[in-house]
Image (cartoon, rainbow, N blue to C red):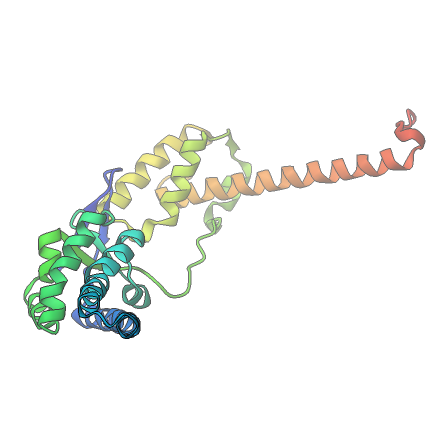
Length: 274
């Protein structure tokens, strides 16, 4: 499977790897079982209504509605509302995205579902299997027509991405004079450090250097020569967090002490001797 790169609105390249053939087959089997189970319930409902009405025309109409609902309407609705994650894809950590990496919309989900009637249901998924094996991105025919493909969504245990002070910069950070960062710059720096593993190496280095240069204007003295941009950002943000926490803690202690004094004195009047 080839490795793709998606260009975001920030001009940052993200790595997007198409899922393997086996993972996609398993997610498709789970979806098929879910839809077949739902279709079985609809068939039983149609049979019950047909027995009650004894009208073959009504039975035929209800049967067509049930087929369309299971094969087209349900898959389209689920993928549209979940932005490309059906039950099977959710279980296997897969998402359907556009070729540019954006979320799928109704048009993409409808084309995939409508094409799936022929390549999935009528051919017992043989056409989809052949297309997925041949296509470099593992696309089935519906994906080719809709302009979509399946990518892996990271799962498992969540990684602790809390800010950590780089040990070799702790002394410099504690003594440095740090002015308040603009909210947008602080947020951008935090978001960058939280998703460094998902960024393309070149974009990661470029964006890190740009953010470090902006943050450096609010810090004096400069960090030791040769300090990596990401370590510099982590040190500044961690030190700011610790200073704000200490300030808030002192403020809370002062407020609590004043509150105790006010409740102790009669009529809540402060003692001038204190």
